[in-house]
Image 1: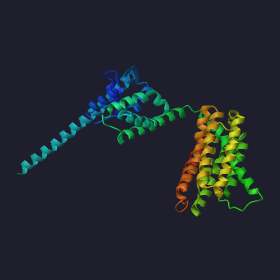
Image 2: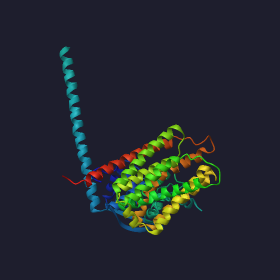
Image 3: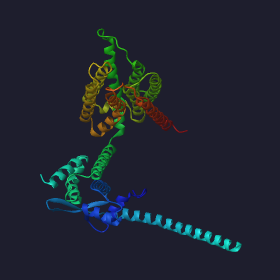
Image 4: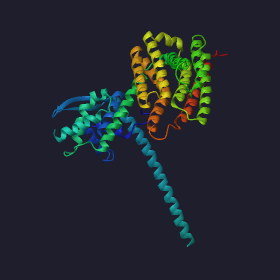
Length: 125
Length: 311
């Protein structure tokens, strides 16, 4: 999974669980908050992802309780899930730092060209 | 029933898209989350919710199938396939031969009379395969390629049909089973007398249906339904008479040649009330056959290279 990276909703679910055990509805609201409302998970996507993560051993059930007659299950990150999230965060950070460095270089190059043009224009005047 | 009750019932109906195992573990929890996220006045799932639940359910079903297919013993499934598939094809042809030799009844033209050559090419290699598996695989590959070419020629001249394409693909699958699997000897070891009974019954049953199908002695719709029922019964019977790890693989392998027939039957039913049967689909199928034959040839060559003693 780490070799090819993980999908954004999965990354955000793991990030939400990094704050501590949470139940399904809390994960959905936390993911929306983390992504500034850009990613809005729905129940079908959330539980398909949770099932996959449980099968892969990245997430496990922390505890269960019944609230208003409805089952509420809390999920937590496993050590393997923590490793997965850390590896993905490091990968994204590395990509982001390369992108930032190149953007800085691009901006510096553009500024240099602009300066030269200004200088040339000044010389001919 | 109050508003939440109605909404809950509708959510439960959508949850049926998920496999039973998934529903057992997450069903109640998902209902709780869905109801918690729904506004107070919501009466029915929104289109986005419905799409998400259907998509999630299908994805969960696909994953569950893939997990189960991962447990399949493909070597044994290929071994049984290399024995059972030609036996089924032979069953179909036996019905045809018997019907043709029947002295009473009207004369009919067989659009698939070219079957006899490939039929022999399938039946003989299996008998030979007990001793000369590699040669038998080669013969099956050759038969598939030859029949593909004959079928393409016929498809270019006349309208062709799904049964012809199915037969063609069955030959290619047989070639692959003979080449990639351990061979019919292992297949016979695994098959019980009950499996043989299922194989014989399904071959003869499909043959009988194909006779009715071509002569339209019964309307096409019921014929198709009976054919589907036979295929389903074959699948269930195979699952009951073989170990699960073998049966799942075998059903998948036998389903490959059944696909063109099924698609053609649906197209036939759709076109029956309009202007006939003409369809470009079977012609496209032969491209798939060529790919399968190519794959089988590649595997045969690879196997030959592996089995050749190194200098």
